[in-house]
Image (cartoon, rainbow over all chains, first blue to last red; front, side):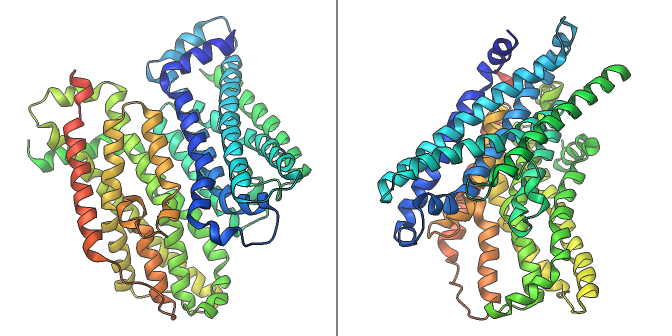
Length: 236
Length: 256
């Protein structure tokens, strides 16, 4: 019910085409990269997927995170723009239903973009490399890992977007966090647990501990968001 | 209305927006690891670049490739949204001012914000260079004239990029597309600055300048001459087109 309403709201905001276009762009990143410098890359030793991810993943992950930032800002922008959120708050529903609906939609949309990008990587593997049997299992495993690692970004960006009525503030904070995440290369310790930096990891860098950390972050952020919502309701 | 009085009005509009904080915070995030890892600069001597130059150029590159363009995308959103939030743009458009003038003023305001951010960056550079010098017992501080020249080059080369982002923000009414396209344009800029056609892509100009400077500072002298003629021509023509299109499109949607 609530999911349906949220979905209907997003219909004319350009949300779905934006994620489709972003995913398609991400899928083309390895294709362009390979077409431009294939003579350099195929010469390297190592697994094809490892080479592909090494060359392209930071760019693809950046696209994904920025898509999530823009998408989350958009989702709350349409609520605040014409005071739509006040009408929702007067309805006899709980407000976390709204957030949960938005979370589901943003999650599905970013998964969609990830699937498109995985198809792009797979296509590159078939066309430019001699692939072994386990290429596709590892490719799918990578997709699964990144899907889980994306969730903390989705939830914390939604929370940030819900706190500020002006879209540019939440967008600014989001961009700032993405920028912080890009500094991960110089510091591999704590910063890789930063929610915006998590999707930058690939299946070769992440392990099960990272998945557990991602799940823990999602739960923690959900609780924090819920607590802040309670406090805000009491003070208003 | 005189041009400067419009500019004054525009500055007043964003006075309480805390945009300066947003322009300043990323610089702090950028500089903290650079100061903490200042000793890493001594390892680059093999490449022929001196530690103090490396300290300078790494930080400025870190800013130019992502944070600078991204800040402008956020600033364009700020300018567009402050007008649209309470239909302020309708009041502005009902006044006897040419819309083109209004549009150019807003673009100039973006340039002023860019200049302010660049000054913040220079100020932070000198503070952090002093701190790093005292922790490492090695003078990282470069002469003011050198830094101001580099910052000036970065600012001037970012003008076409700002015009491009402003055109996107004016022409595309749906916020998610204008923001999304703006952010998506940043991602491939490093890739494109390595190709021969870099001068057709305004977003990568500032970063390209720094790459060239890096090549010059490293003693192997591997930097190519920057092809001035096609670049300047392309930059001027593109900036002109961007501004013309944004002037024509400005307020079109609201006046319908």
